[in-house]
Amino acid sequence: MTTFPKAKSKWAVLSMALSGLMLAACNNSQAPADAETGAAEAADSAGQTIRIATESSYKPLSYTDADGKLIGFEIDLIHALCDEMKAKCDISSQEWDGLIPGLQAKKFDAIIAGMSITPERLEKVDFTDPYLNNGLILVAKKGENVSVKDDFSNIPVGAQRATIAAQYIEASHPEAKVSLYDTQENAYLDLTSGRIRALFSDKVTAAYWLTSEEGKAFEQKGEEFNSDDAMGIAVRKGDALAGKFNQALAAIKESGKYDEISAPYFGTSNTAAAQKAAAQ
Image (cartoon, rainbow, N blue to C red; front, side, top):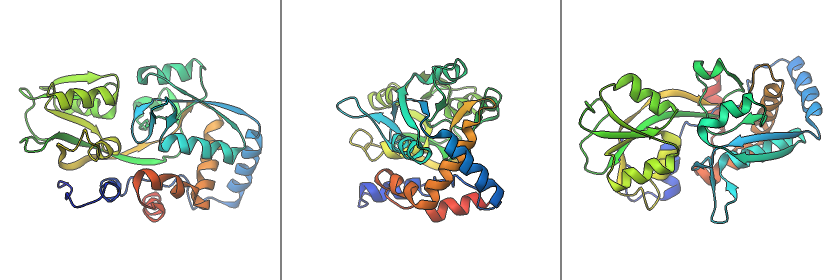
């Protein structure tokens, strides 16, 4: 992908960078019987308290404001889903590495934290239908001559620990000198300070960061890759909560609430793109 033109507004840039990211949360070919089952599942959720874990250093999905309040696309999505299910939301921020172990230990009921659906994770948890499509990009300072295909043996690079980006570096660049970070924010700090020269990152968060004051001296290098990545809500194996979330996702997509939530963060309506992606 080429560098964004300077004349573009922040929201226009975000719209370009993040176009095609949103996936439909429902399957339009569901039979009427599925709708009846969904209605019953939604009724079962009424009055339930659902404990949801997120990771609060992942703009624009989940982060904190100046007062320490959790905000972001996923936080708004959580509230919309719980409203649809007539359930109470209890949201807590957790360390990334502790999310799946905490879910398995029943410290919370679901994870909504930009978590990609992978075969390895599916051995430990169940996922809902995808709610966001994602890919990877390489970020470096403007003017830096670096690409995904380079030999990174002499180029210090970074990624957030236990992420798709970190797994990609390990598999594709065993020669790389990699710094792994507990949060995406800490990865950005080392990138801006020059401790690392390039950062492998999820597109959804890096594209947002590139529009910020801190990210304006940096750019995406080359095209997006690993673009078949998708994010979903994680629940314990066999938990019926996955079906309840799927029905709620379908409902807010149908009502337009999903687009209403996404617009402040991504600057565009994604209904058509999402439905097209789901049909493929």
